[in-house]
Length: 456
Image (cartoon, rainbow, N blue to C red; front, side):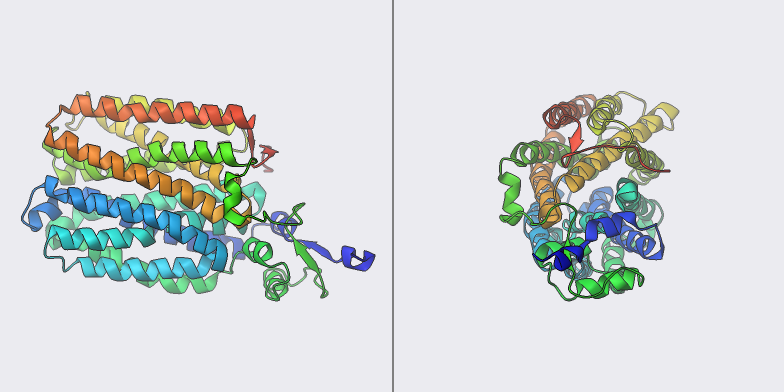
């Protein structure tokens, strides 16, 4: 390389990290947050109205078991297939494909005539909406300055949880008026309406540089972000001190540098997302069938609990760059286990203690999962980032097949609510132990760097 060429090296990572937070960064945050909100709504509304769907289709909640299972299988398949596609052709086109397909399939589900038809439609939909979270987080992390990256991802994840809240509001206020079909109507209209928003944001620069540093679209994209950028022509684009991406691409996560981290993250996601799927799909039914809490009443309780999840997510985002993230996440899941177990023993009437336990559970579960997502996002380089997050999530979706199936078994065995909640608390303790182990292995580092305090 000549001296002149060396002088024209352009560090895209530094360009992104040194930028102030401006309209373009805010727009990326808004669009990704909107997409994740829709994803959260579609992912969680089914569990909230599950008894109503079963009744509408002429069955009982147990008959919805295949629907839940097919949805989780589809989500697992999508988590393995779609993120690598985003690492190959780009974040935006894959996000657009996902919005389009699961929007259409959700509207189709309105016309379901039986459990089998609904199971197939939810299974295929799951392939597409399960990919929204890892791809959206990858895009946001790659277009946000490092000093605000964890915070921005936490804000987007609050909006993902906001979709959960919106599904609760739909259950509490619209279900009796419009019937079980309202969930699928809103779940179809929202993604289709959001499609044009993707035109407002750029493709990830990190993706373009790691795919092809000579891509002629890189320089115009940089100048569109900052017209004063020192682009003169002939620059050699690179990401930080990494001149070459991993030659194995996504498969490098199984190499010696990332292998142990990958295995531990997969185990973490198996238990964490499995437990989330179990509680999201069956907790309202448990509370109605065994705790005597009407479905609409419990939906209101869960709406209150959402604010605990939002607080837990934002707190996690603020603290992750200020304290050791591994010990922080471990603490979250220990408290999470206590809160889950307490739900089986506290009075389920309009009692402050029960609602407080729901708030604490949401604070720790949602905030703790935010921490796990951030560990996965920050722990892999761009050429494997969507795949790294997505495949960890895919293993989690396998847990999302196993755990809800056990939930059906518990329902059919008519186990006491106290026993079910005690058993459900155990995975949270396992998660805490795994996060602690990952912290010991990584010596408190994420992606090979120490966590430094953020600038004010």
